[in-house]
Length: 334
Figure 1 (tube, rainbow, N blue to C red):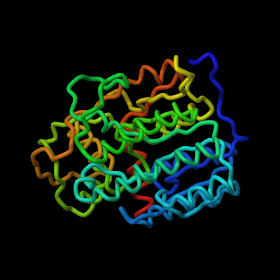
Figure 2 (spheres, rainbow, N blue to C red; figure 1 turned 180 degrees about the vertical axis):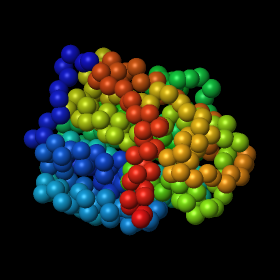
Figure 3 (tube, rainbow, N blue to C red; figure 1 turned 90 degrees about the vertical axis):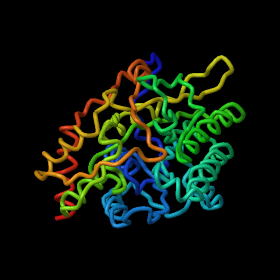
């Protein structure tokens, strides 16, 4: 544990972009439960069913310390107005165009949201100083590297999808702004996040929809793929621990750090599917296909820095996590 570790501070004002999204919703809800003031910002795009986004927002809006602003990160004036009007002290940027496969067909959305949008956040943090900026990166920055587990010291210069390239770009931009303008920033490389209120474009959610309808699920690389599946509550706990703890200055006085947040336990895709089948009580019809462009064979997080700095390691098993997801799914779609 860091010697200067500070616990979560509910007196601060938090800005969470992507608050109607999967991780943004869970993080916002957690901070509101802890008594903090949260400003949520989201464009509620239709990349997936907006009913799910509005359902998440409906839960958040029950908290009196929650304020929601609908807007696009690429709209610089609107983003700036949020900083002027609400004066956030800690910013968590989770708004992004998600998805590896979608980036192959829809590159414009990724540049607009992930690069221009993040630039607007950095500019606002520069002109309206904040105590700490945390932002979502991704395990996809590791590309197809063979060395495991993936360490934040590894070379990440060879992204194999535009999505991954935009996330690597975010890390570079954050470093530059930390160096030039003394912005304390922490990058979060998330590893395959799953759980209730998840994203319907994620494999486990799509599999569940298809299994329930009796449709065939597509399994790439004959199911011979490994993912470091990480339950959403573990991701939220990891972020919560970091909020009050900007990185220490390096030898050049720069406060910049990147962490992996993953389960540190890759599961074979086929085992994940078998566990999901048990949780929903139905077998899947399976079609086996070759590897998809942009997909990686394995993800595996080295979380030693997370443990040494915050004494924290994700620990939810996929058996427990998928059961929670299935229980939520049947309740939500009943």
